[in-house]
Length: 471
Image 1 (cartoon, rainbow, N blue to C red):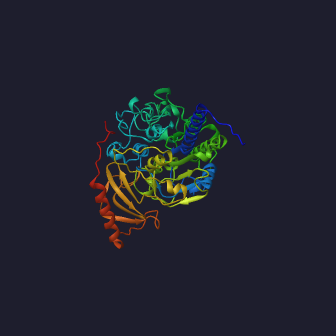
Image 2 (image 1 turned 120 degrees about the horizontal axis):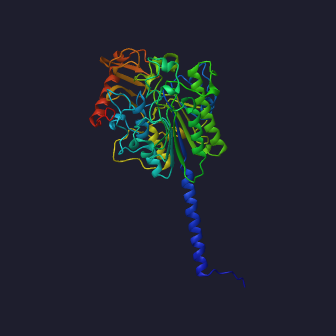
Image 3 (image 1 turned 90 degrees about the vertical axis):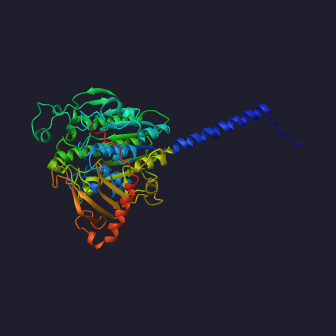
């Protein structure tokens, strides 16, 4: 007679509980594995044409070139504003800056004497991701309020190391007058504080070491032992003027000082990607490299290049808001991709929400679209339009390949210096004419009317907030 070993009721119960526990544990591990690490590397005033993988002939960016060859170049990716503060607010919140008051027709950005900052009621990417189980770190330039209640640690970041506003601010009275402090800069000319969380650790910050120290801090954060996925926002202070680089990069670039600065940022990117590879994190980490706005053209050879695009920083021409953008995620993003799909820094919020299984804010209007399908190669970008604002002024609108200009303003230091409302809108086909040279409005009246109707719909439910930059 065949006999079999029977389990007692208590043993069977213990076995069942063990099975359930293992199953829950496995599901938890799968959920954690499904949440990728997320890194945004954000430059300041980097031009569309400043990287060798975007066509610059004399600035060498081998690390970013490799990142592009292993990932995806976005050829039509935009910031939401042509200057620092509003563009950063848009990235952090997934909203046009005029929706939360982080723009102004008078004071274009926040200054050291400003009393305002990003409102507490705004929900940032960091807050959204922290609620989804992420640890969060901010390194570099913040520029969304320097007072304690506005700093990164009040907006969802577990830690902060960097400067609270632009590196050309807080110029001391003893600094050379005019442009000399910019063209022949010294750190002591700018009384900019370096902060850790809410404490000043150095003032003035030694700006020759900022890129290096930001990189070291970013690497420390990545390597920090933790079971949690992480979100790292690394916002470089450069290549905004005044230009500084470490001694290791002095006189290395054929492009001069500006090239030295960009090449040090390139090296920083290479170090970060190497750490991800070494720590076996690369296949579970999305890295986004982009910039806050276009090049500061009036700074001559201390400013960058928009390549074939028109104008630069401060304008809503393509050179002011279209950014050199690379996204890297080995095993998910196919190698050596170049996409013409539309995207914006505002879209990072919805994209990260999908990837992190996080909950988007539902009590406010977002301007963010999920780009996951483009990253995975499974579909197109849902973004079909783009509204180009200069503070509260709607300057232009993109619909598909067409861009309609309603008003014009030159980049800092160029014409026209005042806002000019056009008697007749100008229309450009950006895929035929990315330099915005050939006005097609007279031959495309139907397209003009279609975009005008789109503007009417946009304005119908638009509720701008009062500016917080003039307080």
